[in-house]
Image 1 (cartoon, one colour):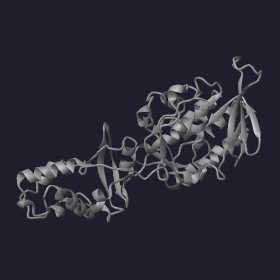
Image 2: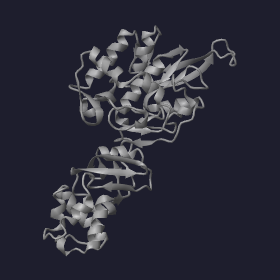
Image 3: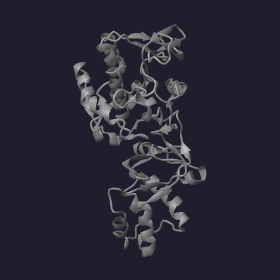
Image 4: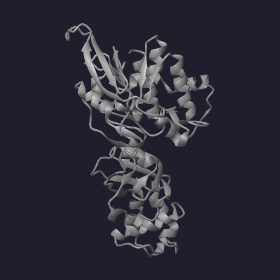
Amino acid sequence: MMCAIEAGKRGKQVVLIDHAHKLAEKIRISGGGRCNFTNRHTGSERFISNNPHFCRSALARFTPQDFIALLEKHGIRYHEKKLGQLFCDDSSQHIIDMLKNECDDAGVQWLMPTQVKRIEPFTADGDSSSGNLRFRVLTDRDRIATRSVVVATGGLSIPQIGATALGYHIASQFGINVTSLRPGLVGLTFAAEDFLAFKDIPGVSLEAEVSCGSATFYENVLFTHRGLSGPAILQISSYWRPGDELHVNLLPAEDAEHVIFSHQASVRVLTNVLASYLPKRFVQAWCSAVLARLSLIAKPMNQYRESELRQIADLLRDWRIKPVGTVGYKKAEVTLGGVDTHELSSKTMESRHIPGLYFIGEVVDVTGHLGGFNFQWAWSSGYAAGQAV
């Protein structure tokens, strides 16, 4: 819709084809129904790509403030939560209506619901070397001849609201590389024997610092029936690969060694001491699972040797856990990977080898962190293509 708006405002004849029966379901369900539509701290460092500088140009030319100005033009109220995240005060439907109205004002024609069957290239003069490439879009309703096609089909995440692999198939059809795909911003699962002690505490959450490789996030961690979720886990999942360990600092706001040794002479049992800093149900599960591996048990603090107290402090500071997988695309917020950005213009989103073919949004190998960054990429990349198409 962002691309269609900008192209329409430039006087281009635009047809927007969508297979869905309901417009912009991903916007509607996002942010608990209030749409985390952007983030004030948007920058290229908030995005993951095999070509990390690719997103800079588009993000610089259509910024969070530009999208905010659009909301204010339509009188949509919003508020800021933590870490620069911006949400609608009311329903995310306001964002959908705003974009739809802007499309209508720009003269965009809608074909919805309409299935795209295939896209056929041809040349207007029959000479494939002339550079006059055109496209014929075949749908279940009609066939449309056009100079330009913009693919804004999203990724594989949340197939229950209509996600498909169409965009990747189109790229492959035209010989454009697609990088490896995997779920991102997704919950992580663990082997049953590794998670046995925690299976009865779904819903328990705590603040923690979670690291994998060079990435670290300090946010909420949530225990589920199958493993871990919550913002810190969703964030780190985009960096995790099978076989990787996660490093969890359970007391990121404290010095774990100071916490433990300040109670060294206490007759209080370890679990009661830790319950002053962490949820009690988690502490009980963690002590039974983690300390048992070291042949330690929860007992009065003054009964531990100094070396044992140091071990406990080290575990609190660096609890190492190894996920075995994710909960998959059905629960993933985004798809990592996509159309190879080395094959696209960072200024226009146009294929470097197929003139008139553009890719924008999640279908491209640009994935943002949690917190409104992926929507901002959608707005920015759509704007960039809409200015050029």
